[in-house]
Length: 231
Image 1 (cartoon, rainbow, N blue to C red):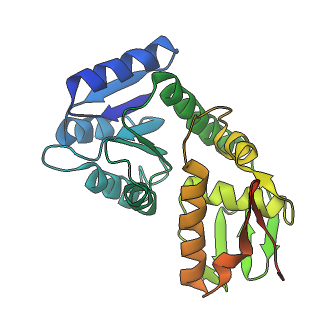
Image 2 (cartoon, one colour):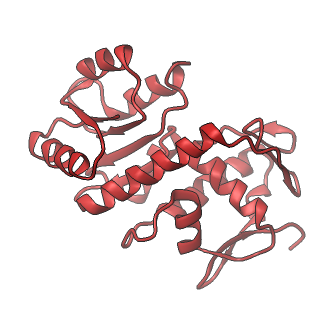
């Protein structure tokens, strides 16, 4: 089940139609209050939030979701007309797992929803035990915990998965296409900057834990990214 909070009736109904046509269950809400009521009655598998809503906006709703023990692990994607890099970083820093700017294609929306749902489902059935390290960074997949300089990192689901992927392939240059497919489960997303934006927020959080630690995540010009210690 997918919950979508969007006050624009045309956008909401078109998205719900596309999701249902793709075989996904979805419910729409035009503001925060009916969404809260539905959330108290049945937890969805994925939440889609518009930022600019009447009354309580999408970022405030996202904060409510993340601060409630019942919903804190729900995957959340922001769908909004605010498409600047600053707005994307703000949404991701606030706890969103993905961000899609309007106008968006319905095929991309369905693809991203399926990717988040797949990742969440795999996380429920897989119990990885790997302890991954690079420099000051340590990640425990089994406990779903990450540390930098022994300080816990407050990572979103996708930031955690991205860091885990980089650490598992430590020293290797990974293309954006590889990361999109392996972390997001998406094979085609047009001109999205999803990977770049997540790398930026991941670096910032590493630097906040230990100045300079973000440099472990290196940009490989014309290719993508890698994590490597000692350069």
